[in-house]
Length: 538
Ligand code: C2E
Ligand code: CA
Ligand code: CA
Image 1 (cartoon, rainbow, N blue to C red):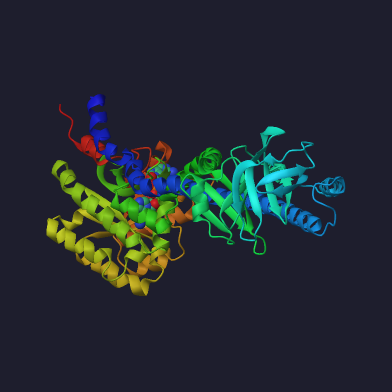
Image 2 (cartoon, rainbow, N blue to C red):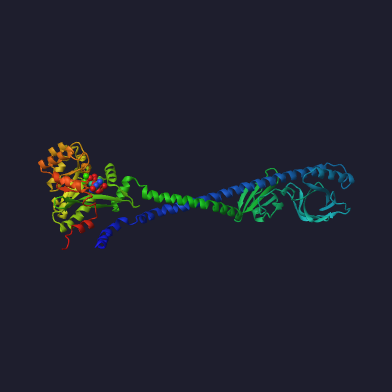
């Protein structure tokens, strides 16, 4: 029996306890995905751009330094050649060689000098050979009229390539790597010095590719991206040379990935936090009106019925509909709280219509079991307005063909303070055959005047007075006064919050016929109420 009962009761509850997060998650998926992906993409994009800019700036300093050293080297060799042009001694004479040695010694860049004739070194400061030595290398003439050899091999050191620059019959011999002795962050980085016209690489560390030279416009600094390399040319305006530096783009990508490896976990963590916040905000951060509207829409609010008992017979003659709100996380919001919120944000009429709908849906099934049963609905003072829930109730009762005397509208005493406005509406309720109960009676200040000015059907004695029974205030004059006045006016009395038999006995002996309270029953689901109203099989 108990099992059957539990099943009956638990079925409709499942509707209220389903996990609403399921609905929230699809709404949150898009922001969550965006939250996860966007910061990472943005971080990677920024990291890529930043790394590229940093790399270009780094290559620019290398190319600049190479050019600066190249210009120094060039000035020294031009000065040396000019100095020898003015030299009065006979070429290759001991004095002449001595002079070239002196000039080479004081120069940072010159390894030696020599006298050049028909493309051969007739004599040089580096060799004692009496015979002219052929220069084996790549020969060209610069736009400024200097005859030059790169990768030149001399018989005394065939393994060592030199650069040779000659003018006025004299040659300077230069170690091509001297100016390239620049520290680089990676050996993959190419640096070099090029002659702008004709475009020729004179010194390089790594390989300055011909394709880069092709895209280089003489005397114009430039950044070239050939797909695999970033190449920076720094050109001199006055001198016919340019420094070049290049690095592999794969190195940049590696560095971006390193940054990404560092950023992605941070991004993911940030996204997770953000996503969590989105979910939390979506679920809980809604404003009170939005939460209430959502609760009504999703039927997170439901009604519990608390029986009203005839104390003389113990029979359940009616029940009060009490609204409940269970939030999606399972927590219950006390009705006092959400009713006050609904009143504050102007949603109370929606709440009352919602309860009315449920009660009018449930009532016929109760009447079938126990004809004459009645259900009370709590109305707020704000419901007592024209066009509000009263009209709604009238229209629904009519349409559903429900006997109006089976309904009671409960109004708190506090809600009746503006009698001038409320009285016509109270009368309108009674005119449709629905009874009016005054709730929490005794807690307001207008009790007597209210009773005198309008004909109420029922008074609900507030549980404060009931709780006082059995204490010192047991025979509170207020309680007895309320009772005698109600009897005199022919108003029915319902005592609220009856928890003990002593309270029940006292009330009954004092002439109160009906009671509501935990002594008899707690608020319950409609299924339980129906079940308990059913006549017991004999
Ligand atoms: P109320 O209209 O005075 O309702 C009676 C309250 O007393 C209910 O509290 C009920 O659960 C509680 N109660 C019943 N028997 C006992 C008892 O023996 N001892 C004690 N201590 N309490 C008992 P509940 O359900 O928490 O509702 C609180 C208030 O919220 C209601 O007071 C009513 O003013 C308001 N409320 C509830 N449902 C609605 C509604 O649908 N519309 C409006 N406007 N107000 C509602
Ligand atoms: Ca009530
Ligand atoms: Ca009450």
